[in-house]
Length: 205
Image (cartoon, rainbow, N blue to C red; front, side, top):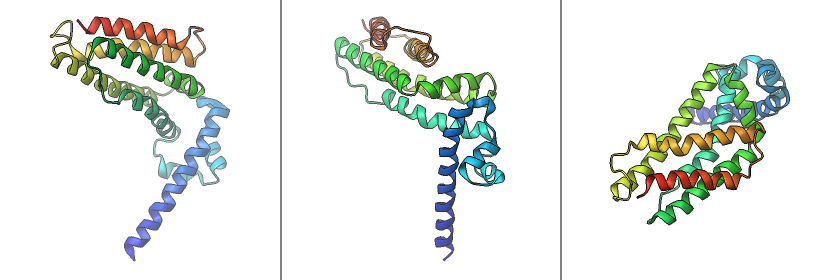
């Protein structure tokens, strides 16, 4: 019976949490990060003010972090695919596609990315979480660099994998923000091709 009760509590808690997150998405996009309040979120979700805090102890920052992590999971799925190229040419195709997919997601999630970017200036918690997300990307890309080194295909066998990973990630991140903030008119496929070529021909011998 206790187990059944706990299961029921867990299900209700999960539904309430989802209701809060769904409502928060509407409020954030309507009001912006700065003008969003827990009261607005609670009213939109149809729950009590305290209920929001019972699920998200750090208030709207924690709510937004959950949304950010959910959206960025789409981006991470692009980066987390198995690194399968056997030649420099195949590697270029692989990397170009990954960056293209990454930037296409930036277009898809443009409104949210712009909101995250503006939130960085108001919340150290949100900014720190973005840095953690960035670290996750760097770690994943550095594993691909290590594979290239292990195969003996790298231009320099002593390359620092994390530095090389950054040479791929950070240009992509820069254009992600340019796309989100409407600060570039360049075609995302052309951006991807340039970044991929510079990275690929620098890494491979």
